[in-house]
Image (cartoon, rainbow, N blue to C red; front, side, top):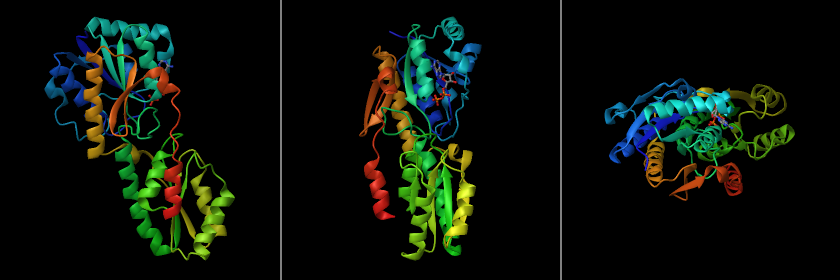
Length: 320
Ligand code: ADP
């Protein structure tokens, strides 16, 4: 039976991480465990920047974006010698279990720690929704709402000017943020890693919207890392009836107060992580599938098939 648990956030930050830190802390304290916060992910672990958390240490953070523990990337954590330093720091404090909040990379670090005798549970925290074994990650819903707020505003102005707005959103290599934002904003086109990208096809579709359907404006939501949206906007201005304008939403998508959905998700995940550790389960990640909390071994998570979004893409196309 474990006696104390450490918490860290790692990789990219996401709104709702604080709600998860709060839930893990309070659930662990309720189970009679000591709780420690580790600063800046695996970096702070290796450097021993670890302090004990009390109930009040996590007061008034459920509504705050970012992560009070900070986050960092430490590629050297793949090196056994570096991890041994981290394990030594945990042993100094008597910490026998960890809850790590992050993505795939963070889970790989946790799996390696598990193999060195530290019990680990992973919580999915990223706005990209690109983590296997869960329908939703902590931060995705907040980012979606941030994106929608911007697209709604862009629609107002682009409708007034017969413009086509190209909106680039985050998502890393996952198109969920663009797809959901496209559906929820009524975008005319959605381009993601899953749809692939063909500039000619995009231009033809816009010409058709302009000529045949007499649309006053068009919104194109596109995932990051696909094409240069400034150049695409220029091309649209040149060859279609629309004036093309590009907007890269950038890091605002990562900030802000978490939505109710994300707070609930983070709270349920955090509480469940402690329950798993108290039941002697380790090297699992937590997720939600069809509104049921589930836990999956890390190894299976790395090979988990990417869910098909065919129906959602079809829905977007039908209603655009
Ligand atoms: P994310 O968790 O969002 O996927 P990263 O891929 O940057 O973010 O991973 C976060 C951190 O996890 C890395 O900076 C590194 O410290 C650690 N990590 C990633 N891959 C491994 C690995 N194979 N072994 C050990 N630690 C890893």
